[in-house]
Length: 276
Image (cartoon, rainbow, N blue to C red; front, side, top):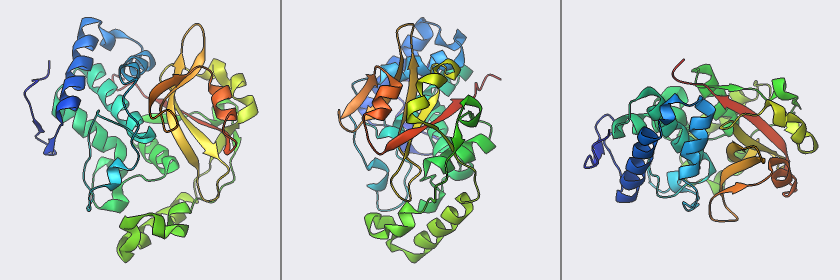
């Protein structure tokens, strides 16, 4: 069990805020009592995600520091931070490495290229890049095409073409790095499941699968992320919602996606069980 008084993850020197420490301890203790580590991995991910329901949505948390900083908190999330924190906690529970340092290290490894934090450009800003990099390191599998997806012909260059919207891109070195990254990403084949065919893929989906909503917005690949929430009653969407300002479950995934005009479909990704 973790030491509830531990303030700093030694490998990254990240101080955890009081609310994060309390929720971390609550998750780990419940997982221990209910033996979540014995569950299929997707069900474990779903259990952890449910523990965050009601936590606030706050955008832009990673961009608040003036220099690239490893931000780790359970106090609030945007949609990608929700994914990263839930997976880091699920991995810790599955492997029995339930100390603060292992959790923090798990967040870092998901968030940064090659699992190592450097300057601003080392962060995996586009979710397609996040998927590609983590898949190359064996932490997940993109199953969109195998689940009935079709080619998604999209040029990804929103950051470089909207430079003024990203204060960190004021530095020419950071901007040039992002341009190079976008050019590299252009060589990646993208797939999506169109919004009117999402329900047809429900049979492929498992609890804890990652969902990203493909978008018609120019230069962007996806606009939102979350998890498949699967019960006998529904195939829903568990996510940190901007409109609801909190983590929630939307009852039907296809209906949710169809409710936002710019969401043209989904990308479907399956986290790999770290237990092998």
